[in-house]
Amino acid sequence: VEYYLDNIAGKAHLNAFLEVWADEARAQADAVDAKLASGTAGKLAGMVIGLKDVLAYQGHTLQSSSHILDGFKSLFTGTAVQRLLDEDAILIGRQNCDEFAMGASNETSYFGPVRNELDPERVPGGSSGGSAVAVQADLCLASIGSDTGGSVRQPAAFCGVVGLKPTYSRISRYGLIAYASSFDQVGPITRSVEDAALLLEVMAGPDEFDSTVSQQPVPAYSQLLEPQAHYRIGYIRDTLERPGLAPDIKQATETVIEQLRGQGHVVEAVDFPYLDYMVPTYYILTTAEASSNLGRYDGVKYGYRAPDATDLASLYKKSRSQGFGKEVQRRILLGTFVLSANYYDAYYTKAQRVRRLIKEQTDELLRQYDFLILPTSPTTAFRIGENTKDPLAMYLADIFTVQASLAGVPAISLPIGNDQGGLPIGMQVMSGAFREAEMLAFAKHLT
Ligand code: GLN
Image (tube, rainbow, N blue to C red):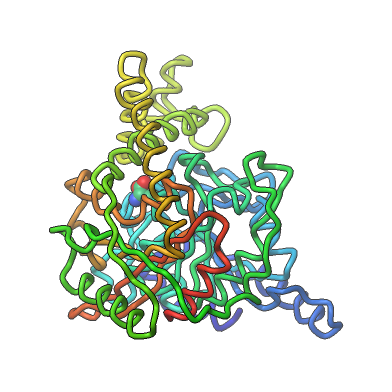
């Protein structure tokens, strides 16, 4: 704990932590020491973990890096966090992220951008940017983030660490601030596949507080990391042919493909007709869900209340206008529009249908192949400010991560090398729903 506290203090310029729970972490460490001495310590004894500012932890500030939740403290601890505590993890602090997890660069945070440790002029990715940098810069052993359309995987790729998005419904969302409820998943960011497996094993499983969570038993993922000798692996041909794909990323991915073939695995290019529809479908559905989920922040029940309101309507308007940042407002407007009476069928219903097609086709590919592999992001970490003027370009860069989110299947981003500028390159492995054990074993083989 002291080691990480020193690192956090020494690297405060990265802006990864919004709050550090130093005394509590020390007290937890003492308690864990005692348990270790008596042989009663849990599976995560001694693991020092940071939490993205979207996870409820009783008595602690919870803000989603938004002004609108100023002063809000959670009244309860969410399921995933409680399970970490039950296995004797030590929680060290709350991590910066994009406001309401909306973003891919950690630049929409009310608390300012997080900086990539490798080059502080560059973004860490997002929305779990603080969580990824914290692992990259050794400010904690692991972080728990959330992934709606890539927010664990893409920052992991930009920071050279491992990021896992489990199957939708594998981990309870109780105590996770909602962005788009049919996509949101809690996921670990770690230095190794082993740690990701262990954290998934602890956090996953049935929970009476989330009716959508799966009842499927949780395998002991951390004990199942032995890879098979032969896999059938697919990659979508067009993902490597896209004009926006950085040449170094294409090359690094092709190198992995060649290595796998050399080891005797079958690796085949496949066609997927819906690649261009993934980002529009994702943004129609997630903004629709967000516009509904964020309706609760009305200046009355939580956090910030505009001081200059004159009546109820002006209280709502002013609190929301002053409390939400620009990107969040853009998404609420977009989501309200696609759900409005005249446009519902043209946008929302249509997007639901397209999601179904994407899911069916993805599931079919994942029956034919053990895994799909694809880049995590078309570029490596870009400069702070470089993409902020063009939200559409920023959305389009989510092209490779939203497929697993639309289909609800698990995916993991792994570091596979660096580009010529020394910036990390990530590659994803995707598997069929609830096949995390196989996916993690293969991921371990790749790292
Ligand atoms: N960049 C994507 C978005 O802004 C993903 C965010 C996320 O997974 N929370 O929606």
